[in-house]
Image (cartoon, rainbow, N blue to C red; front, side):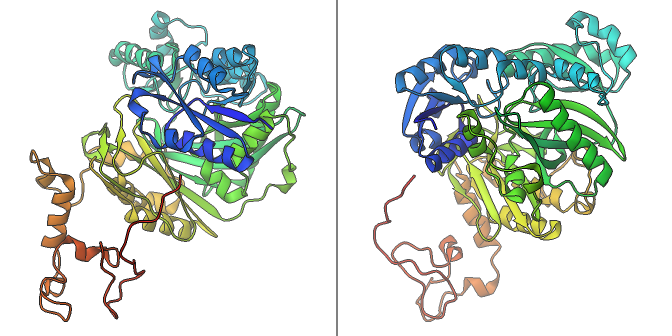
Length: 527
């Protein structure tokens, strides 16, 4: 096992990898831009190195800076997380050339499968159906002609990565040129690769992906599938495992194709093979040659720590189980909490998170990279947390997720929590098997329930003050009593809503507020 590992990422995935290192007894090194100087992943790591200013191109995409940080701290391996350089074959090769271990697949495997065009060619050669699309070698200026053959509506997709970056839906030829140009610019900025291609849009399809693990000893296993159809602007909102209402024969075919594809490129580490499913018809979309954002739902139903497995495989250990040992235990569902405004087309809402309270309770997990008082920089993705619920069946898992989201508090910025709650209550979602266009079809003009003028929009009024005022205004008469046995004003003010959590005062006997908190200085906080 490595003694020191550098995490070439930020946010919740950096926190996740650092925690895995702690359990393995591995020293973890964080890197950070100036925008992330006070970020949780920096505080949690054993060491941290500044790699540049906020723009990703000058920090998290700077290969020389990351390799320099690894050399300076004695790191033996680099974990790329997801996004940024995670699917960059040149980066994986540079890590190996520097005498370090890349925690992920070999550069050649990334080049063949991380590159979406190469992956389509390879899987088609294996006899796996692929979504009809443009010639993989087409130049940007030639794609207009290819579009007529592919047919409208279609998708413009980035060749060098996933996560919704560089993707555009195009309804007609008149909008193609603009979509190609903007998608190419976004792909270059986010992935360092401007290439795009065209793919036919399969209407009302479902996005299903299969998790695979492969080691350096020739073992390849799948960890079943995830449903990832609830998306906005081609970025996922809610994921679950296993996929509900999936034909068993289709499930077997997807898992078999995923393992065949991984074997064909001598894959190593964790990866996900994505498919589009409509009824019993299915097509290969792409392979993500990295850990996925939604990996926790697979961990919850299989009991397998995917990040730990990644690190152990990179260190040369064989997979510790066989395919027949992988069992599905219950159901898991995850919601992504983002600082964005669903009422304004999911526009990003960066800024300072004045208050963040994560949920808990039975079967609930929260992966996050923010704390109260922390900043969400405008330069990076809007994801701040993932709330995951697990239970013995889908119905209870969904109810647990709803309960957990209602416990979650995000103040200071606009978040999508209210939207997620409404989405989870949608009849199509409750029934299982929603399609990838559901959000666009039903929620394109979404507004918060009962929304009128926003009281927090007034200059100089902190969102906490507005929230407290609203809480007071909506209390019933019984909550406004000012003359009980605890004295005048005992039950007025926003603090009455906090139960036993009051500064210097435990709840009165019989008040029903628990747990009691003794007065005095807070206990020391660990990482």
